[in-house]
Amino acid sequence: MKSSPWPTAPARNRQDYEERREQLLASAAALFVEKGFRDASLAEVAERMQISKAALYHYIGSKADLLFEIAKRTLDDISTALDNAAATEGAGRDKLRIFLPAYVKIMSTTFGRCAVRTDRRILTAARQQELGAIVRKQDATMRKILREGAKDGSLQNADPKLAAAMIFGAVSWIPRWYVENDRLDHDQLADKFVQMIERGFAARS
Image 1 (tube, rainbow, N blue to C red):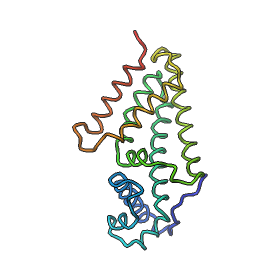
Image 2 (spheres, one colour; image 1 turned 30 degrees about the vertical axis):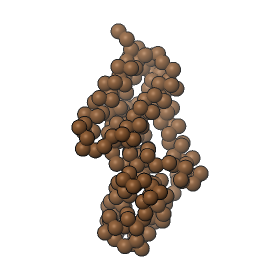
Image 3 (cartoon, helix red, strand yellow; image 1 turned 90 degrees about the vertical axis):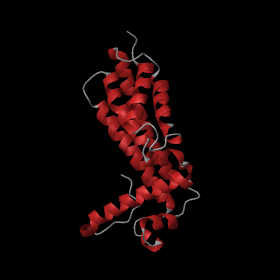
Image 4 (cartoon, rainbow, N blue to C red; image 1 turned 90 degrees about the horizontal axis):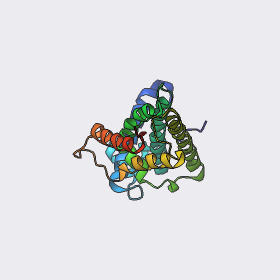
């Protein structure tokens, strides 16, 4: 298991520490989305947190640490939603219906937008590899769902590699154009995307 870049806090302060860390990640994600990773500074993150820059280093070592945690949190949330869908009893199409709304909602959040809009090549090679391993596992799980759907007749018998790439590509593009408080909220956006993807991959009767 990879070690976290966050410092270890005393057990008695763990809850407060974790709450502050969540606030820090949220503030940093919003700032990176607004200004871009390269133009945002830790001083601005500290200002949003209403703490000194020196105090910020109690929670984080560098700006890249923040980006890694945001990207990994987003990927972990996607993995959880995908694994839960894959473990559900039912046809492949049913599993896709369970996963897609959760996936769209994750990618339309500030964390999702930050994770997609920021170039991960900023991170160290080791961290890029860690995130890449998570993505490859997600791809394998999605292909399995698509193969199951083709076998049970609920989904088209499409190339699972191409179909998985199309689904992940379509949804991961959302953060590049979706703006919160747009005419579609997260639930409405998820419904629209699920309908479009289902029409494309559902088996023809």
